[in-house]
Image (cartoon, rainbow over all chains, first blue to last red; front, side, top):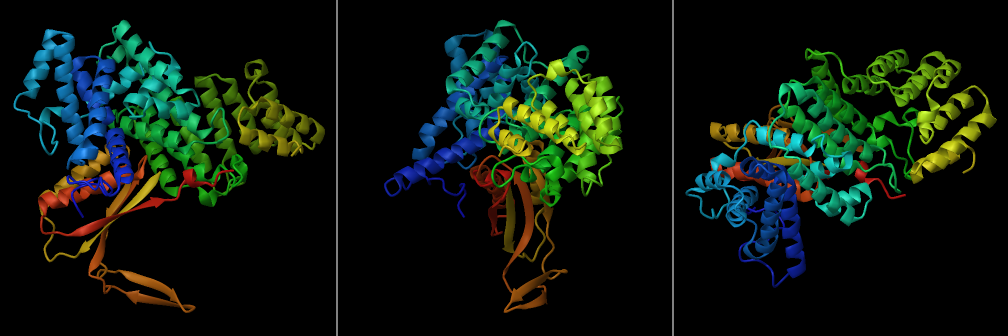
Length: 437
Length: 123
C-alpha cells in the first residue's frame, strides 16, 4: 500500500491512462479531507483574523488551490496539514492585500516565520487547537443569536460541517442561490453587528449555548422528519447533527443539556433503520420492528443520558426528552413500555417548556397508560388553534378515536392529517389509515 | 454512513513500540472528538481463544485457533463518516502511524461500508 489514500493519483500520475477517473478520485479525496478539516482550518484562521466570514473565504481559497493542484501533483502525504498551511499562507497574502489591520498581519507574519511550503504539508504547531477553544468559538459564532434561524443553520453547516452551498441547498430543498445568499448574509450580519470571535461570558453563556443546541437539533429534525419533499428521512442530516453534538459534548463536557441533546439524537437515530417501510412510508413507533433498532446508538445514547443525569444541574428539556426516548429504547415492545413514566416526563417537560406539541405527546402517552378515553381528555385541553396546521394533531386524535371504536370520526381526522402534511410518505400513511388508499 | 475498518497484519514477535500505541491512542481521541469514531477495540491473536465456526456440506464444524493464515485480525474500528473517502482517510492516517513508528510492520486495513438507513431502496 502506498502512502496515499487509495484511488489518489501518484506524483507521476496516471492521467494519460485514466484521465476522468483519476481526476474524479482526487476530487473526492480533496472533498473528504476538506469536510474533515474545514472546521478546524476556519477556526484557526478566524482566531488570527477575528472575522469568521473572511476566514471561511480564505479556507475556501485553499480548497480551490488543492482542487487545482492535486490532480497534477498528487495528493500530499498529509493532506489535512497541506490545506491548513496553504490556508494560513493565503491569509497572510490576503491580509497584506486587504490591509485589514496591522496587528493581525504582524501576528500572522510572526506565526509564519520559518514556514516554507512544506512538501509533506505538515502543519506548524501553532495551528493546533488542543483544547478546541477555537472550534467552540466558531460554533458559538456561527450560531450567534443576532442571526436568524436559517442563517445559523446554513453557516453552521458551512463552517462546522464543511458543506458546500450546493449541499446545503440539497439538504434543505432550496435553490442553490438561496443557500448561498443565506451564508453570505449571515457572514455580513456578523461583521455589521461587530460580533467578535470570542467565547461567551457566563451571564450570556446559557442563552448562547441554547442557541447552539437549537441549531443542532433543527438540523437533526430536518433529517429525521423531512418537512417537505419525497424522502421521509434524510439520514445524512441526522448524522451531521449527531457529529456536531458529539463534537460539542467533547468541547463542553460539563453542560448536562449538551449530553441530553446528544442522548436524544443518538436514541432517535437508532430507530432510523426501522422508521421507513420498504415502500418509503413512515413507520410509526408502535409498528416498528425493534430488532432493527441500532443497538450501538442506543448504548451510546443511554451512556450520554447517564452523563447528563449525573451532572449537577436542574434537569433540562433535552435531557427530559432523552429520558422519554430512553423509555422506548429500553422497552422490548409497545406493551412493555413504561407509558406512565413517559406521561410523567411529558408533564415535567410541559412545565419547563409549555408547548401544545408537548401536550399532544402527553395525550399519546396517557392514552397508552390509561386508555384512549383518558388520552382524548388530555387532547381536548390542547390549544388546537396553535396546532391548526400541524398534521400530528388530527393523526393522534384519529388514533384515539379509532381505539374507542369511533371509526367514522377517526377516518375524518386521518383525512385531515393527510391534507395538512407536506411529506409524501406521511400523506400515504394517513390516507391508508383513513381507508382511502 | 458507517464504515467498519479492520486491521490485519502478520503477528509480530515483539510488542508494538510504545510510541506507536501512544500515537494510536491520540488518533483515537482525535477521531472521537471529531464525532467520527463510534467504537474500536484490539483483538487477541487467534491462538488465544479464537475459534472458527463453519457450515459446509450441510455440516457445522468448530475449529479452534490458531488459524493457518499468516495474517491475523488485529483490531477493528467503527466510524461514522460522510463518504468512502473519509473512511479511507482515517484508515490511511492509522497506517501512517505504523509507517512512522514501526517501519518494519506490514499489514492492511480493510474498509467496508455498513448497510444503513441511507441504503434503503428508493420507493
